[in-house]
Length: 183
Image 1 (cartoon, rainbow, N blue to C red):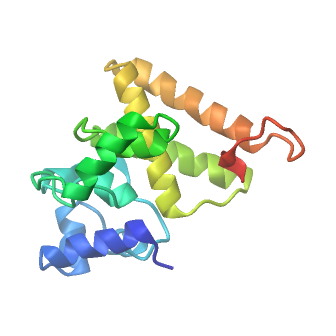
Image 2: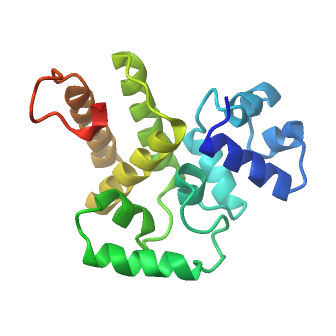
């Protein structure tokens, strides 16, 4: 079943005029590996995101659908309005983080965060759409990137983030402190 991320990957492939087999070679995946990702049955890893960024595509757009598809494209006028609005409304952290003009998050970091979150959801039995998973991964990766540039600290932060998400998901439904992560 295709979702937002897989549809955006298909859009990228088609914009390059490539077949699935050719795209797999470009991002150094097997043909089947690309098909699985493009069909929404798996998520792109850090290396795949990095290769796509090298080709000029925005990891933010790939994962969230927000902003411009290409890194060098100017933000649409409505995106600038969203950025201005998000500065006035700190109650929308995901929107603010997604629209923040910080540039692109390191593809490897983003891939590791995405994989960690995917594993937490699989291990706990909770489901989340690929688009929501991508948005959450982008938000968490930006937080980690802002906190440290040290690879060891980032690895620890990813582990801690995964533990926190797991704990939040496994809170009893009757717990008043349970967040939207498990809703």
